[in-house]
Each structure stands twice: as C-alpha cells, then as structure tokens.
Image 1 (spheres, one colour):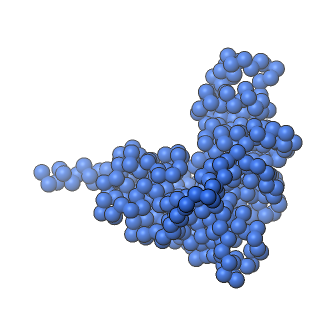
Image 2 (image 1 turned 90 degrees about the horizontal axis):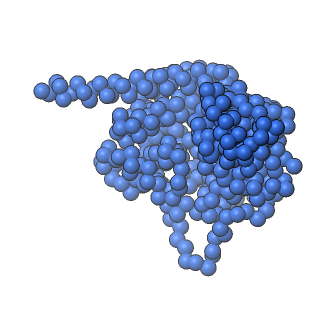
Image 3 (image 1 turned 120 degrees about the vertical axis):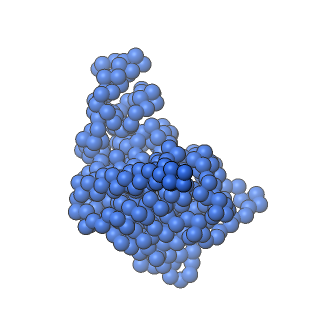
Amino acid sequence: MRRVTILGSTGSIGENTLDVIRRLSDRFEVFALVAGRNLEKLVSQVLEFRPRLVVIEEASRLSELRERLRAAGCRDEAMPELDWGPAGRVHAAAAAEVDVVMSAIVGIAGLEATYEAARRGKRIGLAAKEVLVACGKLVMEASRAAGSELIPVDSEHNGVHQCMRAGRRDEVTRVILTASGGPFRDTPKEELARVTPQQALCHPTWRMGKRITVDSATMMNKGFEVIEACWLFDLKPEEVEVVIHPQSTVHALVEFRDGSVIAQASATDMRMPIQYALTWPERGPAPVPHLDWRQTRRWDFSPPDPDRFPLLKLAYQAQRTGPAATCVLNAADEIAVAAFLEGRIGFTEIAEVVEEVLGALASPEPQSVADVLALDAEARRLSLQRIRARERARVEQPAARN
C-alpha cells in the first residue's frame, strides 16, 4: 500500500487524484490532505479518506476546521492531526511515511513542500507549473541527487513522458507541445486590447482555475510548459516547439533522429495522466473515455502567431536567460493576470507589464529556495508598482486634456 500526500486536495487536480485513489483503494491510501480555504469540501474529503494529517493555509481557521469535523461526525479519537501554513505543507510532503506526493497547489505556495519531497526521494506527481518555472534548476538537482521520480501530470508533459518511452533521450531531436490556442486563436490582434475578463475565461476546451485560463488565452501557459519541458527532459529551448491544435486530442509529439514522430493522444480527462503518475511504469484500465476510431476525425496543427501571443516569446527568452528570469516571469504574470481580472489593466497590458518587470529586475541566479521566494516577492512588488503607475497615468491623461 502506497501512501499519498495531496498538495491542493480541493482543487480540480486534487479532486481527480482522490477519484483515482478511490478506484485504486487496494493500492493507495491518503496520508495527508493539504488545502487552502475551502473547508466545506475539505471536511467531506477527510470523512471519506481518513488521512492522518490535514493542513490548511491559516492557523486562525484550525478551530473552525476541528469543529466542522466534529459536527460532521468525526470523533475525537478519529480526528486527524491538524496543521497549517508552509511548515505544515512541508511536514505533509516530507514525512517518512509518504511514498507519493501529488503537487497541485496553484502558484508558488507549494514550491517549498515539493522541493523537500524531492530532497527526500519521494515520487512526485507534478501538476503545479510554478514549481519548475520558478525553481526548476534547484528542484531538478535535488530530485537527481535523491533519486526522486518526478512524473509530470500536465497532459502535455505527461504525453512527452509517455512518448519518450519509445527511445533513448540521446535519440530525441525535438519535442512538440500542442496548445488549443485558447479563445482568441483567431481574434485579430487589433481587437485583443478590448478583451474582457469574462471573454478570457471562456476556454474552448478545458475548465480550469481563473489564472490558468487567462494564461491559456495569452499562451503564457504554453510558455510555462516550454520552460517545464526544458527542465523535465533536459532540453534546450530551441528543441521545444509549440503548435496550435484546436481539437486538444494530441497532447504531445516527440521526434527522433531517424525522423520518426511518436504522438500521444487521448481524451481530455486529467484522471489518465494522474493515474499514470501514481502507477508508472505500469498501465492499467483508467476511468476515462477511449477514442472511437470509427468516427471521422480531423486534426489541425498550425504555428502560433508571435504577434498575437508575445508572452510565449517572452517565456522562451526567459528560459534562455536563466533561472532568475523565469522566476520573475512567473511572479509578474500572476500579478498582471490578477490585475486584469480585477479590471485594473487591459488584456494586452498583461504582456506589457511582464516585459517591463523582466527588463527592470536583474538578479543573480538563486542558490536556494529562500532566494527564489525572495526574488518572487520582489518581482511581485515591482509588478504592483508598474500596475499602479499605469492606473495613475490613465487618471492623469483625461485631466491633462481638460
């Protein structure tokens, strides 16, 4: 029986992971659930899966969580250990009893816990892009030193991982990541400045959190995946290509030096890559629909427009520059996307803010997770400063004309 910690249990990846464990209960059990503020959903998970440890974001809500569990019928003798914050997340991921960590906390919050899991040789199902975008060099070094198995859960990287089984790494010449293109893949560039948050949140294929949905609309999400692919598979940026594939059925392709291209295709259901990460190298029946090859199909592939999606180009540049730049890229984007969703900046200004912060913040390569977190905080501070400057400029311009 393998014991699993889920970082981000109440999110979509966390819920899908619990569904896979529910179906494979003879092989996996939940050791720890780590969540944020959604106590209602967390309580139902605790009652079903009976973890030994539960971690939430805020210490001030531990009493509330305990009372909710009691009210739901959890007796004191069955009450799990309750913890909170960064130290609690590290405890949940690094505990000696843990075999597998599913890293699915959106943003930088799960970085330290995932890094400590890698240092201790855990198998990590990696679903949080920010871990490698912000701290790829340190996490990969720790993983290699400890013999940690880092299995990607994102459908694209999971697809690459599967395709790589067809040959040796030194036989690979190129990795191709597919992108849906988001809701604006055919929108004229001059119309993008008028895009609203509601329009940006209408993804044509996937139902995801707000930030990742906007990142898909700007294609920054795919830029992050390029950075991840470089770290996961020891690739140079020029060895990773992105193509628009609106059908979102082929998730990745790997080209080998003899000209063969191996593609991974499956239904758009995250339970398949989650199960793959938990059970690798085995393959078993998964609770996802199979493709029906009797149906007529059309698969389209086209290059992304760099003028429409400047953030994708910035991601390539940041990876070539180094780990400090990719850390800043992630932080600036998160702040800019939040400002867009709040109506403080326009859609095209997301890329402008990110580019400004990248150009203004020159830092040495981080040597520790603490360095990464400090750089992340500084990038966020500068991003907010640039956004406030834009807001002031908009207020002052009409006054000047009057």
